Amino acid sequence: MTAAESAGLIAPHGGSLVNLAVPAAERESLLAGVSRRIECSDRNACDVELLVVGGFSPLRGFMHQQDYEAVVAGHRTTSGLLFGLPIVFDTDDASIAVGDQVLLTYRGQELAVLTVESRWEPDKAREAQGCYGTTSIEHPAVKMIATERGRIYLGGSIQGLELPSRVFPCKTPAEVRATLPSGQSVVAFQCRNPIHRAHYELFTRALDAANVSEQGVVLVHPTCGPTQDDDIAGEVRFQTYERLAAEVNNARIRWAYLPYSMHMAGPREALQHMIIRKNYGCTHFIIGRDMAGCKSSLSGEDFYGPYQAQDFARDNAAELGMETVPSLNLVYTEEEGYVTAEHAEARGLHIRKLSGTQFRQMLRGGEEIPEWFAFRSVVEVLRAAAG
Image (tube, rainbow, N blue to C red):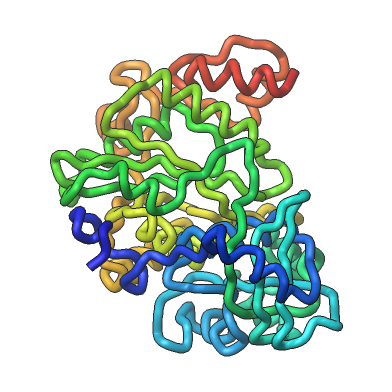
C-alpha cells in the first residue's frame, strides 16, 4: 500500500503513483550515456512533465507502437488499461534508432533522457479517426498531428532530470494528494478559460451533489499548456486563477495547475482528463455539455454531440473507481440569481445573458462588466493583459 492510499485517498490509475525523477547522484552517469539530443515542443514538454511526476501513471515512458495502436483503436493499452489518448514523442529526425539514449531539452533546460525502445511512422489518418472521430483538418487536433507533429513517433522509458520552468507552478500529483482530506470526495473541475461567476456557482454547487460526501472538496485544476490558437494565454489565465483564489478564500476549494496540452478530443479527452485527475487524487469529475468539444473552422458545426463526452466518461467511470458529477445548466435570473435553466423556465424568470464575444468587446471598449457575469479581480487581470 502506498502512502497516498494509506492516507485514505483513491489509488492512482494502475495501482501506483509513478515518479521518474532521477536522484541527483545518478544524473552525471545518465548524461554520460546520451548519444543525441532533441528540443521538445511545448506539447512534448507537457507530456514529459506529466510522465515524470506521475500524471500519466502507470506509464513509465512514451508508449510503444503496440500500445499506441491499441489506444488509437480502442482507448486501451495492450494490457487492457484504459487510456483516452496515446502518449508519444514525435520527431522528424530519421537517424534516431532503437537503443539510442536521447536527451530531451526545452528552452535551455535538460528535462529527461528517453531510451528509444520503439520507433515507427504512424498512420496519422487512422490516428485522427480513432482518437478524434474525424480526419478533417478543420479539427484542431487533426491539424496538429498533421502539420505540427513529426513523421516519426518514438516510444521508450523516461528518466527525469528537471521539470520545465513555468510561470504557473504546477504541483505534482504527490503534492496535490498531500493537501487532500482523507476518506472524502474530491471533485475535479477542469477548465481552460478564466473562471467566471457561472463556473464558480457550478463547481461549488457540485459539492452538494447526492454522490459527494459532506466534507468533500473541489479541486479546481485548469490546464495551462497549449490549447486552441484563440484561447487566452496560460500566463494570463494563471493570474486570473490566483487572484480569484485569494478573493473567494473558500476552504473547500483546492487550486492547482495542470501542464497538459489540450486536444479538444471530446469523449476521448474526457476519459484522459478523468485518468489524470484520478492520479492527482480526485474521486469525482465534473463533466458538462460539449466538454473538450470543438467546431469545424468552415461550417461551425460541432464535431461531437452535446452529451457524447458526458456519456463516454460516465460509461468508463466505474472501471476507474470514479464517479461523474453532471454539470448543472445554470442561468442568471433577475429575480433569483443563478438557478438551473429548468427552474427558470418553470417559474418564468427573466434570464440575463452575456456571450463570450460580447464580454470581449466590452473588455476592449472599457465598458463596465456586470458582476453577476465576472469577478472583478478576473476582469482587472484581463483588462491589464489586453491593454
